[in-house]
Image (cartoon, rainbow, N blue to C red; front, top):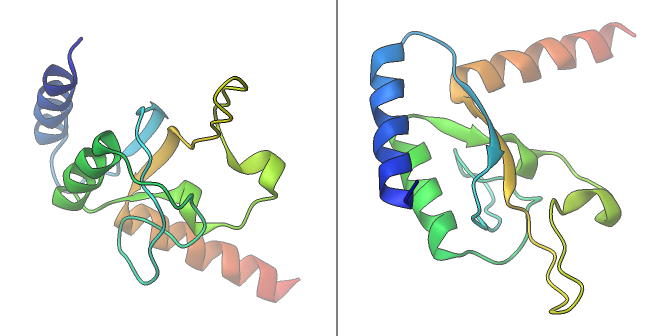
Length: 118
């Protein structure tokens, strides 16, 4: 499936789901999304590189209030990257857990509450 066809199909699926339902997307999106501070989509703990596929994924995610959870939690370097090509010494993050913003905020709040109670 071509990239444009994939996003078209994903867009159709999200429209069918509707705006009130929670959304969780998991998978290899083959794009590097970089890092951003105080951003609704990309967190501060991703990788520094942004690819064309990553830009497209960011734009798509912004239109649906989706957030890449990978970049919002600090990881050890060995656990941070999701793919590695030794020959070219590439270590990108291309696999993502993407959730709707409301789901992410609810998860964080409940997680914080349980930590505070401990």
